[in-house]
Image (tube, rainbow, N blue to C red; front, side):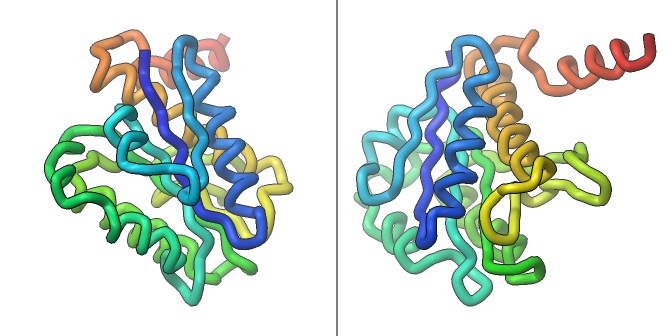
Amino acid sequence: MPKILVLYHSNSGNTQLMAELVAEGARQLDGADVRLREISTADHTDLEWCDGIAMGSPTNYGTVSWQMKQWWDQQPIENWGRRDGKIGCVFSSAGAWGGGQEWTCMALMSILINYGFLVFGLTDYTGVKFSAHYGAVCAGPPSDERAAEACRRLGLRLAEWTACMIDGQKEAHPLRQSYERFRELGK
């Protein structure tokens, strides 16, 4: 059973809405245990507990919010190196398209990589010319279906990768799921 942590900071509530959709997506995998935590209520025990993490931050001046960065900066040094091999992905919201969401996603991935997480993005599209290659992104709230679906798909994919790579549930492998979906479409 994959243990998924959705960890986020939100200024206006938009990143929180994204986090809720990511958690919803992770729960689509049977048996997934999902914790949704805002950084003010999370601590290092949540990192110990999880097998996979989806981390979200608003884009502030083209990068991660200072509150999210501070949260990671204040993690106990004794925990360094104890996250190696866990699975991670990211998401971000900004006030407008082109506001730096992908830069923020890259910065969030850098934090996870430094802690030993294995990170991924999505190769599939959730709408016409809409993908989450670096993580789910949106301008404002995730109010249109393609942005909402990118969040849900990111959460589901995190749960699938975690179940497969950490728990050894080969039947949960995302490509297997995709192949089955494509076969159904071809009928």
